[in-house]
Amino acid sequence: MDVLTDDHEREEAVRKWWHEYWKPLTLGVVIALGGLLGWRQYQAYQLEQHQQDAYGVFQIQLQLQQQGTAALPQADAYMQEHQDVFGAVLALDTAAVQIQAQDYAGALKSVNFAKEHGGELIAPSAALTEARLLAQTGKREQADSILSSLLNGPYGPEAAEVQGDIALNAGDRAAARQHYQQAIDLLKARKVDISPVLQMKFDNVIAAGDEPAFRQAAAVADPKA
Image (cartoon, rainbow, N blue to C red; front, side, top):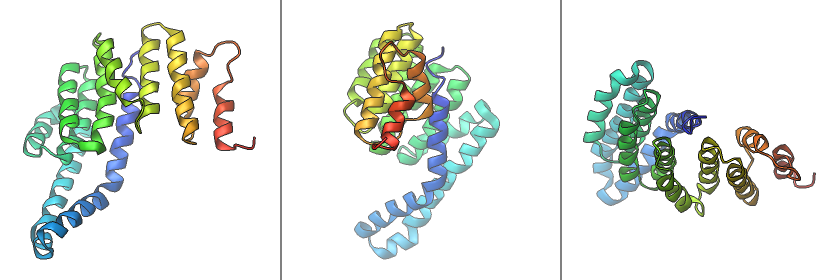
């Protein structure tokens, strides 16, 4: 099993989120800046500039989807000119293309760019991808260190799930079961739905006496059940 298998799904989710919310996100950033720089400057420059930045990301994302690695030079050029959240978002798309091409060193470089320039919005997701890449290249201890640092934060369930994926890839089914259950427990504590994929992963390594994941998920969906 490849520890990067689920990463494509995660990148797709980030991509869909960005396509849906880049306009209001951009407007929110610009309005905040407008309060500092003045309404006239906001109208004359900031709105147009940030819209152009966001649209530039969108255009290169399309190129990456359609052309794959052939579009990497355009993506790299944009990232070097935009060492900010816009470049960080594009860096995740770039990493996804590089992962598909098995260019793990290049993908790790892109992910580190996203971590450095993405702030709280992008950095945690980038860290999850970084951990998968490190595990894929045999650096499991470094990967575990990154994931452990995320366990107590908003991305705790995702970090525990990735730890389970890494353990299962290494053939340690007992550790995988422990991490998947931890991910489920964190989601249950937050009253967040347990994804079907996580349910299947846990049930694949379930031990005697464990409550099946679908029943745990049902309890979250309907506490009275």
